[in-house]
Length: 136
Image 1 (spheres, one colour):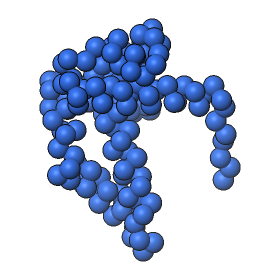
Image 2 (tube, one colour):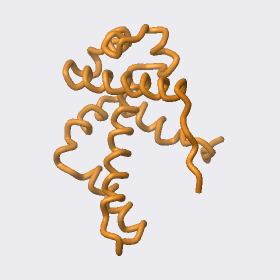
Image 3 (spheres, one colour):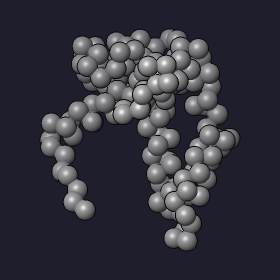
């Protein structure tokens, strides 16, 4: 299997997206999600509000992207660290359950408990590429 190298332009885009979502989550945790403006997130990430809008359409979308990316990274680490004799299904199930039931993750649950963030989280969860909604 060959791996595809990511070009410099794509790497910069990924870095900008990561900086925006990390700034959004940090500011939401510091000030409350309702007290964070897109301009604040863009400024904290070192980009213009217009650049921000190239990546996210709302502050909620950026906050949810940060939470999701963080969980995905932790799940991937746990699956990779599972003992060799563990089946992929068991390793993945255990890692996912740990991410959604671990007491230290309460901060993230509080953030997603606000109605606009919960809505954005559900939208992101149902907007999986290649998967059509039952209502479509």
